[in-house]
Amino acid sequence: MRKKRVLILSEGFGSGHTQAGHALAAGLKKLCPYIQARVMELGSFLNPTVAPLIISAYRRTVSTSPALFGMYYRKNYEKPVGRLARLALHKMFYQHASEVIEQLRPELIICTHPIPSAIISRLKAAGLDVPLWTVITDYDAHGSWLSPGVDRYLVSTEEVRDQLISRGVREDAVEATGIPVHPDFWVRQDPSAVREELGLKNMPTVLVMGGGWGLLFKEELISKLTARREEIQIVCCMGSNKKLIEKLSNHPAFQHPNVKVLGYTREVSKWMDASDLLITKPGGMTCTEGLAKGIPMLFYESLPGQEEKNKDYFVNHGYGTEFTSPEVLDHWFEAIRDHGHGAPVRINNKLTPLYPAYRPDRCVQSVIRELQGTIGPVRLHAQSGQKVKQQAN
Image (tube, rainbow, N blue to C red; front, side, top):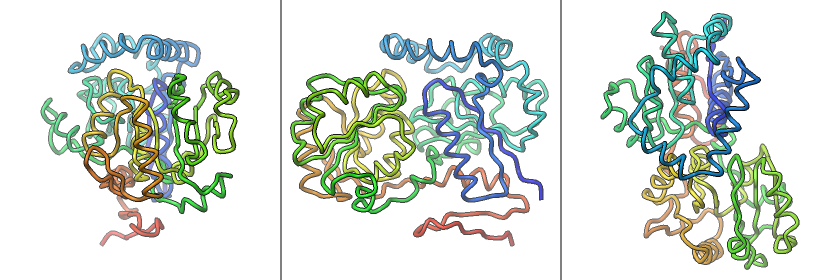
């Protein structure tokens, strides 16, 4: 039997978009071996010289001029990618995209970034006959995600679904599936066992994640974080920010056996299992991974734009709070010390659920249903996480 082929397209403007694509591909592989998914950052693949320069310039703008980025986000909030912009991107990066698609022959194209979604939409208008789906990887729907050739949108929440419908998208073309996360995040492991595996003490633990480009630390925050290092274990995961890793590793306040500094790691799932609180920038993927694990979150230094929207969603639904002052840490440290691992913690006068109403496999299941054909529907066993296959009647 020929495998069903899914082409997942993204771009490197922020780590979460491509991460969501790989998470979706891993979920499909776990639940349905008859579906073959390939993830590609299309611009970088087709133009490996120019694309990294553009992405680097974007990152510098976001890091050094967040207010400018926020202003652009708000100004263009209701606008899709313009016709001239789509044409320019097509000429620069995507003029050979149809050849790539013809070679790979996918039954379905899924985009986790607005730019490839807009370009594939343009190719569909020119005659490409392949269904196009778009996975929105934030808890908001910026206008750039909307393209006329998209056949179906998979979105994070019912609120985002309502946003798209209010902008003219058909109701039957939008499904609130949640953002896909890697299957590692579909289950929770015993915290004591994971701590032992990771070389941590079995004590209240806080995980600090800096996002794809690293969290910006201030001395006041460092002082507050490490003030209770005798009773609270601190793990700082700084991603690919080598300068910040070196700074923290050499900082006097971090010279303690209960404080650990990490760089990039593929074991974020385990570090979350070992932790009682996640301090992070509110990127869509990290927030969703925390949601899947049922870990309360404290949001630090939100970028204007989609990160602010993500933060608002999680705070309003009682899954986290905003880091408004260093004193907020005192409340949290006392809460995790007194409640113990996995117990509900009161946030904004709401109790955070141990397992929030989020089905991490739902996005994958939606893709499987579309492509099932002779494969038969596949579902994830709710308790054991084992693969269960049901043949079609």
